[in-house]
Length: 484
Image (cartoon, rainbow, N blue to C red):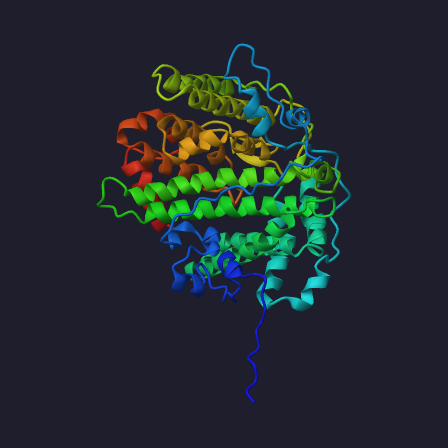
């Protein structure tokens, strides 16, 4: 009598195999079942686009708004719009309420960082490389996720504690830590191996994360927010990697980049938008639960100034420069009124963000002192200290879907506004998951704009030191990568 073959069940297969109710071999970036059937495997979402034949743009995970969601009044308090009676584009009410950032407070210091091993329950189940990842996370990676002691304490102590109860969070921790190690490693094969581990772990995190999203409650809301934030960090860093690899792969003898390289670059830019909005989609339904938890220092910033105005002569000049961008669509009369409103709202939010960053960078302003503020280029020669890098991330969370669609379809006006946002990202120093993002975005935008429109991003290119006139900065990138 023949014996029946054992079947090792898994809950971590791709979406297509689950629908067909067959065993998935979990091969990345595409499982063998999907290869045989010619299906688009759901694992593709997490694989860097430069390793795929299909370009993927991440989309936000939508969740129903519950009775615990912040009201429009609360959202206005969370991310207050500055008073600009004489300057600036005024964001529309719908944009401000529907696309606002739910981020706010650097509160008083929490108790000192604990040294207790909060991963004890996992250790018996971990492979050797998981042990390495745990050590790296506790000693280094978790400290790169916040600029203040309360935030660092939350990531180092409270997040691992939550991971003991929510397995999707431990996979998110493994993923981001693997990605961090890949950035630090000098060996190309090892970097590739660690990136693959990061993709695999993030896929496992998201597979379980999405199931939990169907029922956000008091017990899982803080863990879901932490995981969505780690997912945003993952997509920020992989977008940098994708931008560099796609752009560096363009042959030097080709004067104009292929359309596929341009499309992949724009996809990588948009992925960072959706990554931040994904965290907001979790925060909104469970706002009260997250704010009342120990994750409050990560998402709540009541100390940010409500009235935001440029805080230095340089900031005033940059605000004037930004204001001029509105002429790109108001003078030409291109597009419809809704598109113009969306562009103006995005520009208004960008001016607000520039003003906020200037206020949090100015050493004369009396805001809470951060033990580890981020080195930030105040101008071309001076480096100040930005008290909270979260200020830079506000803009992407306030964007309307229409504006993001205009970036996706390569509308010059939307691309130019985004290029000016890249300046803020490019000025940040010593943040591994943001390093190179500003310059990579600018090169991608330059390629999409074409030579005839490069004058529109002359200032961002100058600030970021990207020679867009020389093959859109590609020669400069190739030279820098050869030097590594």
